[in-house]
Image 1: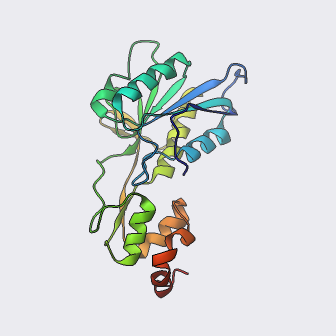
Image 2 (image 1 turned 90 degrees about the horizontal axis):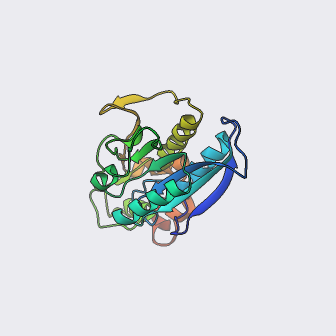
Length: 238
């Protein structure tokens, strides 16, 4: 997963589900991320989101905005997305109460897919049904990789795994489905909103390699480098 930048990223992708759009007048999917520098329990996988749109939509433009944890910045970016003619907005809120003012607005409003945390007034929701709990049983960690290395070293009993890739791919499917007027299968109603719910899971030592293989959050070489190399050998990881 690459970090976001404060610069607006524009990637020309595809629109196979959409008719009548062109590279001169693309259909715009705006992704408003709360904090792209977040390495611990990341909420959005931008690479996965972009790749999923690319696979399902020809000649669309994905525009990614990073609020860097500031609700006022996110409000400005939402206004910018609308000025840039966003056709659908995927919103990972910095602050739910502040973000509520960014959705809705009448008959011609732009549809909003809430990401990770439900925002009142959003049209759809992809994310976690419950608030994130803190990783348990160890010292603070700056990233998922560091937390996993602490589990290997025996410094903490577990780490919290947020399925950011799966959520981001689902959010992309919902956004493209909205544009094609075809809601993806599998929605359930959560607080009255069509939703696709995922679960953050506590991962202990025995599950670390499964997470690595399934999510690609980090490589085995990264996990078992330096101070954890000998421990990984003892555990049979390498």
